[in-house]
Length: 113
Length: 115
Image (cartoon, rainbow over all chains, first blue to last red; front, side, top):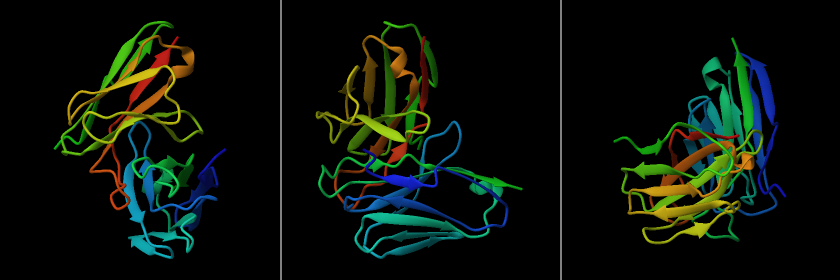
């Protein structure tokens, strides 16, 4: 059973296009983190969302946490080749030890010049 | 600050051999984690240590052991390697357990192949 489902699994777009990546669960999360991972490296944190309905912006990236804290989305405006990578959502479920995080399987994004 | 460091970066083992993956962090973080990452399967937690002196099993602990040597260091040991343990292993750390500080900092990974 996948506790955090990410979609799409793969996404290939042209530079300048917009895209949205989704992270969904039937469980409630106390917070959600979004990470980006480049080939051969470890994941790097992009943002944390904590409050239901929260929206955070990081330059061309917009992150939203669902009202019920069961889902999140990442929207990229005018994607650039430098956005290429694996995007992971993760977080501690409310019904488990707060010290552990559940990770989604990731969305692999390729932005072509 | 080096952040989270892992050694070795690459390793090839034969079935049945043993080895220890080393991890150290210099951020004075309390919690440390070991994950494995397989193609298309995201990150799966092997073991974690909420604080110095404590360790707990994650989702996939079978075939592994860990040691929290001190606050900085958290090692992962494979006693008898199997081909199913071929994977990329990541160590991570976090300031403290709790709902308001769940950001984890990851090392560069160890790429392990078991023949």
